[in-house]
Length: 65
Image (cartoon, rainbow, N blue to C red):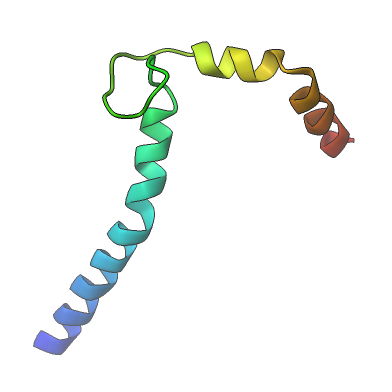
């Protein structure tokens, strides 16, 4: 019984280890600051800059069709 719970705890810790960087990247992608050292506020400014870039949009629409 204990080994079964140890396996589940180990699996849970592995998932945390693998998914935490992705979660942090998702949160900090909305950061108002240019640098990731501190979260200064929620903003979509960098996504707007991304979609203004012509080369990024060409690649995006090329893969859609």
